[in-house]
Length: 144
Image (cartoon, rainbow, N blue to C red; front, side):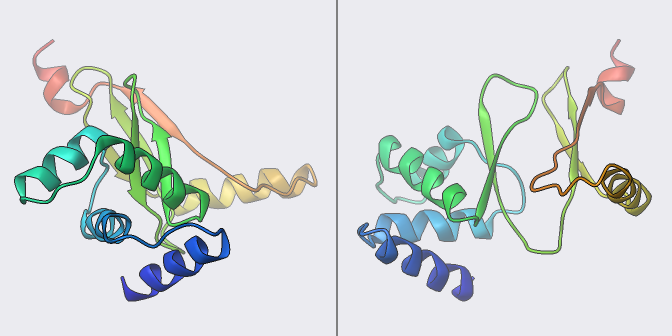
């Protein structure tokens, strides 16, 4: 967390942006979260902890965290975006239940290796990769 904070503070300074307690608080909240957060759930979490921050500050800070590479923004099935912290060397993909919205993270080394091979076969250098599988989770299948 300290490395991420130091990196974020330097990013803000390099871009002539203010280092505020609200921005650092949002960074900490994102990095203490193990899953995916949307801006509204983040606002709700913070207010439940007695912390005051505006919805606009949350959206602006999340965008800054994405821009500097500390967070990832994804549209996972629903009509809204979710954010998650980026952990170097810990790539994963998502299965999204179209019934309940549940997000299941997974990693498959064979799939990862196959994608690298496909890129090599086509002399293609990827800069970003995202895989999302949509369908029904086990619970939603039971209620069908």
